[in-house]
Length: 301
Image 1 (cartoon, helix red, strand yellow):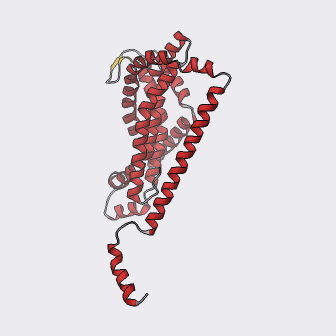
Image 2: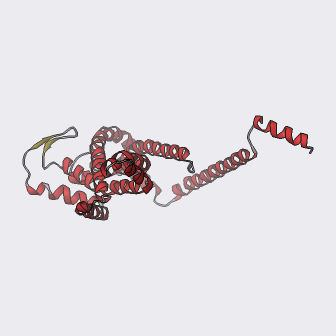
Image 3: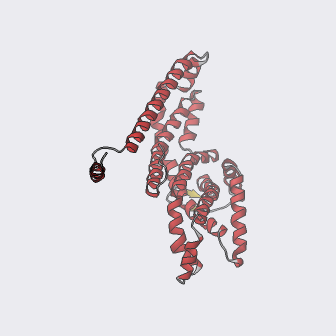
């Protein structure tokens, strides 16, 4: 190729129509990956469809877990109890965020005078992350009402007495999940480079104002994806409060199961929770991918 032809090619390159070789290669790899994933999914689904009905106990399992008539009867009733789970979640979530942030601030304090707060934060996270959530609900939900607290409370979630399982079940979830959320906040705070603090100090900001105006805004944006995942787990674990007596979706499904000697209501309850959590899961995935695109990271499927 002559020098004039090379120059013409360079001039016309910015005005080239169509994908580049790299873009075409990436599209080809993506189409191939989608095809392989679709074929493997269809193959596995076909194997399951053929193999499961051939199992010796399939008829018994189908009758006990997949009774269509009982599913249609119990599903609307269980759906009516979902609002109890949603209200408990909406009450616990903001309390967990606030208390978890407080614990994270205690663990990240650098003032020697506040060292006891740092020890408190470390002990708190060790204890409540080490004890299973269901045991925390048992200990708080049955232990504190055993003190014989008197009086009534009037909250948006529920109205009743101070020994109500609704309030102490919520407190147990708040105590347990705050430990996990505190670690999420702490990791976000520690991910902020020390130069940010140094720059703030050079501008005359105190440690408190540096944390408030420089560190926390940046850390908050970084921890939103893991926080959303924790709240997805919280939405499911709200059902654990039923062991204290409150009637919600899972508790009512157990009652119908005991009356009918059939596990189909439990399956209906699982479907209800899936209807709630799958859209939230997709929302989390969308936000994580959006964040990665903005920061130049790898986008997941």
